[in-house]
Image 1 (tube, helix red, strand yellow):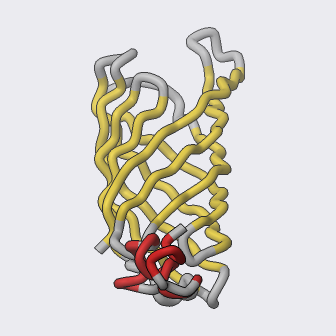
Image 2 (cartoon, one colour):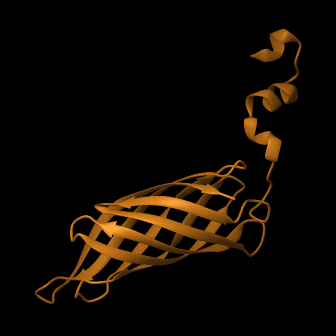
Length: 156
């Protein structure tokens, strides 16, 4: 495209790819502290997440957040741990989340998550996460609910 202006392919890529200013090549190089806003059905969370790299392609994330469950009008604290694979910008993540309802008298539930994470070198984060919530109904019957979560955030 830009070759008509006398630029070669490498120069063209440098101009079109704005993330080359902060080039990352592996999970070890990315920004590891993150603030993330998350929406899961009627629950909205504000989270802090830390990436713990093990090698260039594999690591873990830990997360704590506070949110508001719109269905129950309840404050919830979310704890989460996930495995992370990929990089330097695109990742697959899977793990377990545990919501602690502060004033709601219910048996604890847990959430299994597996999804896609995009994190560029400038710190922008986007996630889409299919998940399944396991919980006990008021009758005592075990139940589950599939859904999708969406997140947007910033890494520093």
